[in-house]
Image (cartoon, rainbow, N blue to C red; front, side, top):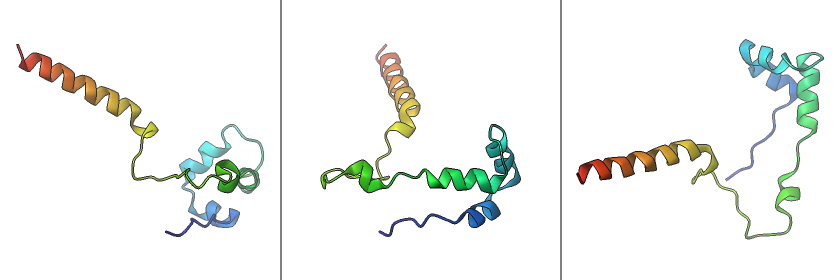
Length: 87
């Protein structure tokens, strides 16, 4: 796997749809390039987060937090189905 390369401010500006531009600037002061430049300057290096721990691994093949509501709803639906089926 190759790490993602962060796009430049100019590249990000050119890729953003108009609705996304408006959304980004809704609560910010300044122009779009200034806001993006500030956002990109606050990146925290992954090595700083993980530290010197080779056992810490980040993957995207087993999402957990993103599907919390779906998981909970699915489990509840399965329990309900089994309970009704047993009647």
